[in-house]
Length: 179
Image 1 (tube, rainbow, N blue to C red):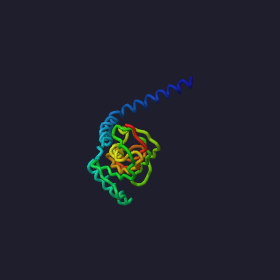
Image 2 (image 1 turned 180 degrees about the horizontal axis):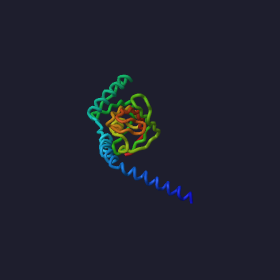
Image 3 (image 1 turned 90 degrees about the vertical axis):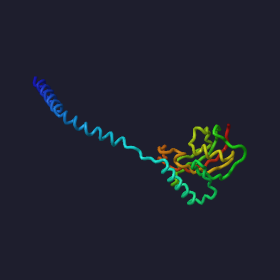
Image 4 (image 1 turned 45 degrees about the vertical axis):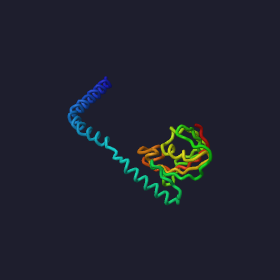
């Protein structure tokens, strides 16, 4: 019987604590009323991304890369892509509807390799815009160095080991293509 009384006392104490907690609910509501909007404002902070400013930053970084690496034959495409045809290759040129087979190495400006592909077969619509613009400048057997501004790469979003707004440096060997 003593055990029963102890359990009932615990039950009573538990109810008393809950009643005390319920008595504090107006204060909790007031706190929530002020904290919730503050949390929403902080979590909804706008990204102050400026595409024109990023394009200028990327262009300056690519020009510095060209100078630092003594690249003498770089061409700037109207899109903002810089490229150097290292070896032109022979035959026809791939187009936007081609399926290409390539070897490639992708690096960041600091030299960090983030991608290496061997005999990668892919369609042009499935690759970044910088590849779509640059690779048609070479034929089968050709090699091209692509210096891709962030807007033609992964843009204002991180992708795996590539931070957002990264200029990409790709060396691409075109092994072949099918239209």
